[in-house]
View 1: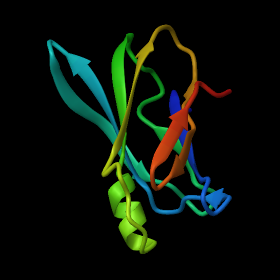
View 2 (view 1 turned 180 degrees about the vertical axis):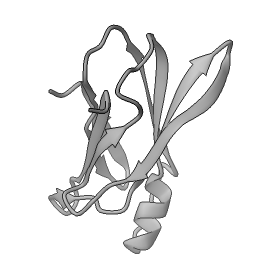
View 3 (view 1 turned 90 degrees about the vertical axis):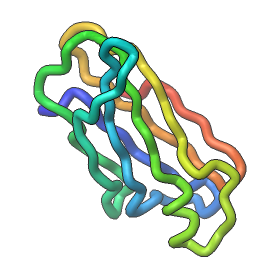
Length: 110
């Protein structure tokens, strides 16, 4: 099972955000390298990003929000959203994103 998952809810429509591109990167020596990528499904989820084992370190999820809003014919203030987090141990990390054209929020989910 992947150690990282995410979901995106379009708060303006009150429904899952379908087709949002998501990239998971890992920081090493002040450089970022891609670990995995995907896009949200019909339920707004990317169930598995990354490997079964996630080495300790700093990671970043990048959500292609500008592309999503363009596809839904709405302006967007944020062309992308980046969420950085520190992974330790063999835990599962679920990082939901609540999104609207001019705001977003995130948290550590279960």
